[in-house]
Image 1 (tube, rainbow, N blue to C red):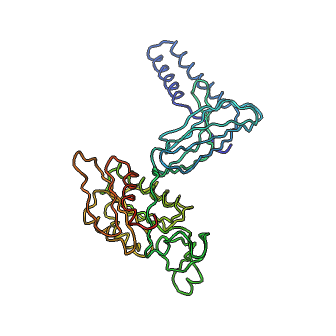
Image 2 (cartoon, helix red, strand yellow):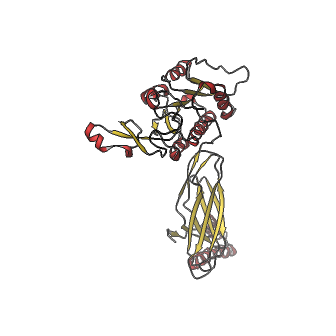
Length: 408
């Protein structure tokens, strides 16, 4: 089995050596010969334990599988470990430890003796309550003496990565526009239904996949040109999140990120291309439903940044909301001023739709929510009260404006 090995004393072993040395010192002071005998017995026990550990031969290979390696918060992530004895003799009892999240938590268990060439399996679940990217491993295997004084350890399976996306709720598909977004329509592709047919050329925009560069046209135009493929979907949805630190409390931020993931997942299920942008400087570009994992990965690691960042409304305008962003679903909190909300509402270009989701940070003790009036065509407001789930508020808003939106 690959991995370095060592034979350190355990804490218990060091404690016994320390007690033995102390007994020798006390015996020298008080002249009690029996204390010398106890001290020697302790040192001899450590030596015997070291010899016992060194004298045991073992060689185990380990393999780890994550099922799956990407999950939504609250879903089940299962680990399967396989341990095999590579020697022609029976292995001793081995302690296995698989650290998780930088060693903050770990799965610990004993591997029973295995016959020559035999294998055994173990399985356990990983905690998925919190979103993020977590490291699992590397696996540690250790052989200890019966008294736990000396331990010989080796590295087992290498580290694996578990990505926990924000919790995903089943929500209604966001509406799509039939306006200036040339990607929108009735779901029928212009040139075909495969989603990979050549459609047109356009200038490069920040966030575009460089694999889509049309090099012949680039050389002729002396600027990057992107191959625009026709997609058999019902348009495009841009999910935009305000991540400025002053806008959020931790609980409200998790609600917003979970809501953003839910909307992105709903759009992907409907065959709609989705893009994620946020004020931390991320723009994933439009991803096909088959590649929605990249968007959810970004939401898994999303965090707030200093408020000196670019306001969300300004970022949306800079990214060209009025050209091909399609429907926009923007997420902010009730910390946003009326002027900021109005600026967001004004980013909805002609023929485009904007759903503005506002998440309350604190539970109100009394009185109705101070919901601002947007009063702009093509803009809907979804107010999520603190301590309440996002899905009902979203579905109510879509139900109340269904007749005003195309493609629903």
